[in-house]
Structures are given as structure tokens and as C-alpha cells.
Amino acid sequence: ETGVTQSPTHLIKTRGQQVTLRCSSQSGHNTVSWYQQALGQGPQFIFQYYREEENGRGNFPPRFSGLQFPNYSSELNVNALELDDSALYLCASSLAKGQDYEQYFGPGTRLTVT
Amino acid sequence: AQTVTQSQPEMSVQEAETVTLSCTYDTSESDYYLFWYKQPPSRQMILVIRQEAYKQQNATENRFSVNFQKAAKSFSLKISDSQLGDAAMYFCAYRSYYSGGSNYKLTFGKGTLLTVNP
Image (cartoon, rainbow over all chains, first blue to last red; front, top):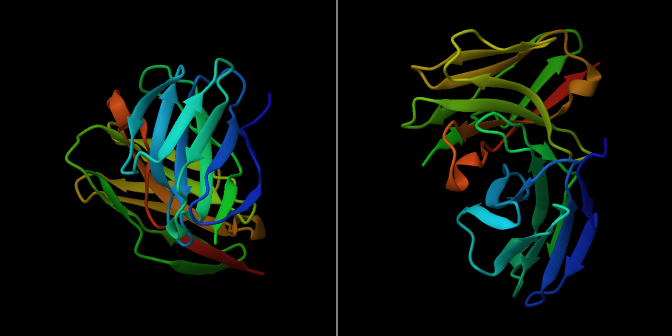
């Protein structure tokens, strides 16, 4: 069974640029959530995708957008990067089955905006 | 909105000793899940233990156990026989029991950095 993978591991971008982060869900999982973890903080929920549709969103502006593909892999896109977007971005996949499921996290992508 | 508070930014323990990490939360819901996650330097968030709010019995996983006090909205993690591999950042997290919208999201505390001294 393949775990959750994310790419790239590290990324450096300039303010105002756009970035795409990728996540490959654990085999059989149809739900993916994205979290932003600033340095010294706990992860903050960005949004969740279930069967290719956004299923809930945290307090993040529209320049944070996502996609989920038929194979349940996912992308997080951030436009007009700001310095405060520097963070570790985590994705977590799960198999939604009623109330009881566990989220499996990937190792994250460290984004630095200069 | 739910909040999770971890009041201990850092804790240290001697190898083989016991340590307790504290967590409090605020919610108006009666049913929910609580979790402790471990994040080692490799950054991968690993589930340590979970507790369903409707269960009165405290969860236990090998050397890890919780003290869940629903009325006090307290959820502490006890690590017994601490090992060097337990050194990591530990996060307490809350999830609503109810489905729909962003209810599946995890709400995390700021974390407690645990150091294990040999």
C-alpha cells in the first residue's frame, strides 16, 4: 500500500508568482484535505476535496485554489504569492465512510516566498 | 468555531520516565473526536491516539494513553517509558462528529515540542 506523497519537497518562489503543489493520495482514498502550517504553528485547514469537488473551505482567500483528479491525486494552487504564504503545506487523504475515518498525512512541501 | 489550546510550548523528559502533555479545547458540540498527532523532524504527521467524545473510557495505545475530561474540556496525553524516538512536536487536534461542509477538518493546537534526554 502506497502512502501519501507530495511534490516538490522544497520550493522557493518570488512574491507575486504562482505556485502549484501536488499530492498523491493513499491508494483507495477519495478525499483529500490541504493544510498550511506556518513556522511554530499548528496546521490550518485550507480546503477539502471529495470526489473531485470542493467539500469545505477554511479561512483562506480565493487565490488559494485546488483540484482533485479522477485518480484522486490533487493540486493546491496559490496565485499572487505573498511573504506570509511561506509555510509547510500538508495534504492528507482519507477514505470517507460516514463519520469514522482517519486522515493520513504526506510529508509536506516547504514553500519559501522571497 | 472550535479552538484547541496547548499551553506547554516545550517539555522535556528523561528516557524511561513518564511525561504528560496538556490540551484544552472549546466547543459547543456534544459529539466530536480528539486526536494527538506526532510530527518528527521528517515533518510527516503521524496519528498517535484518538478519542471519541461519546466514549467514557480513556483511549490507550501501548505506551500512550489519554486523560479525557469532557466536562472540563481537557485532553492530556501521557507517554510512559519514554524513548528517544518519542522526541517530536506533538499536536492536539479536534474534529467534529458531524458530516458536511468543512466539518471533517482537523483543528490543531500550536503544538508541544517534546525533548527526550538520554
